[in-house]
Amino acid sequence: MVKSATSCEIVEAVKHELVAPNKEHYIKLDKDLVTKYKDYEFPIGVYMYNHGRYRVIDGYHRYQAFMNGKKEKCDIIVVN
Image (cartoon, rainbow, N blue to C red; front, side, top):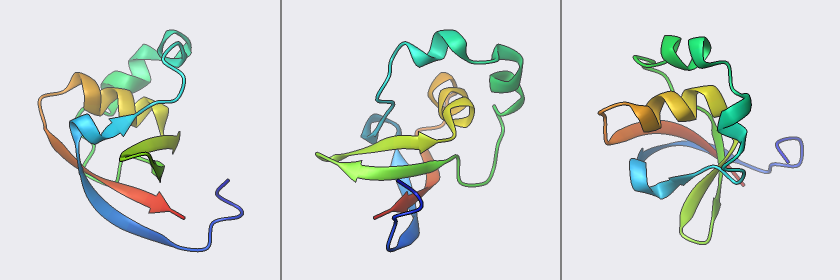
């Protein structure tokens, strides 16, 4: 999907706007790595906008760290 992207931009997103397409993916994540990303200050991953929400395509560990944290907003990279 990223190879075929025609554009990208950095967007400030709100927590409820983000979604992981595979909810079971969390089980397979390295929990120590998720913890290391808890204070990550850069865009947390690559997303596509789909049906009013941003769907993660790269950055599951950072996504989960953000979802577990207290911040309500984060920067993401959105590709089209």
